Image (cartoon, rainbow, N blue to C red; front, side):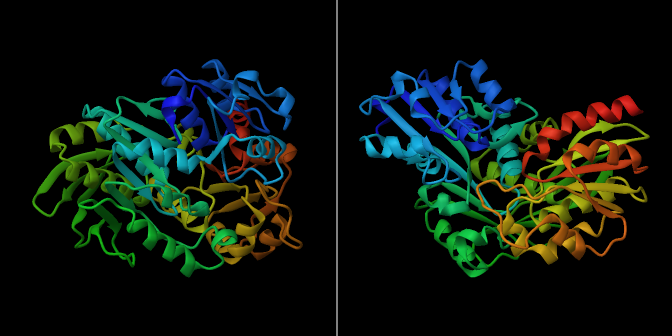
Length: 450
């Protein structure tokens, strides 16, 4: 890939969270950017407002002429795009340079000091914390985020090109295109078995990723994972460990034991031990990079979170409405732990939209066990994303496995009425599909009903 001769970048699947961050990056670099996506969303609207041309039909005739010169145009696609996509087929057949998003990220980061965040859970929050810490400490950093940062209202932090922060995505083994200086692995729970086949292959891919780190680089690994590196954990004997945890006015206050010192009095406002662990690894990487304790403490205290990661939509004494992207049983368990810690003794209604037929099939029993912990459960139909249905794998099938009598399956058209009829003072929407598009409607209805 030769970015020097590229004037135009066309994205197939531009509305994806990772794709849109790259699109923003190239807009900021002064290139002409356009793309296709199948659905109009808030993300595509924001890109259009930046001057990006987007259409929503798979139709080569709708591609603007500036993107049709293979000498000056780069084509970027997401693996979620079907192989039979007409536009993708056209570009591949007509001499264009066509690259996956991960390959483009790998090229951009190659000439920088790259910090990469890997793991089946926690990537987006950890990456956004790390990017915020570096940016607030005046590092010349570009951070590509897998979610919309509440601090920047963007999935791109752009403050120079000396350092890059990226999510190292295990899906489709995309992270093997990166060669980071520092990397961390937050978790290695079985996922994406439609790609890997079994959990051992997933573990092997993380082992392969750990070997991609540059000479003299550093690997940070959550304590207990079967890969060697600088360890981190909560209230344990890891190289970096959270100590002396207190909850003060809804925020964590804690100290960090490093290999050389005890760094005191950090404040962090995201609930849940999983988020505390994400904050710790971002701090550990920042300390190893050389940033000072006082600046880091101030930066962490100002961190606001990522949209759809335990995001408060309503927060009053009478009613709490939280939205979260959790789409794996372990992530649902983490959300449950956080909400019980913050709202002990209160009834919790969880609305869950399963994401992918294959994931629902692979983890049906685990999903059922995780969801049964809530006081009341509402399921939506499975969000298919890139997949065709699998016979017998439905939300009703999953619902039947949940050992909790307060459960039901509803259609989106019935969702708001179902929520209002519930007397739960704590409401959660959970899932990685288009349930996020329903959140604003639910919030408006709850505000009107209160």
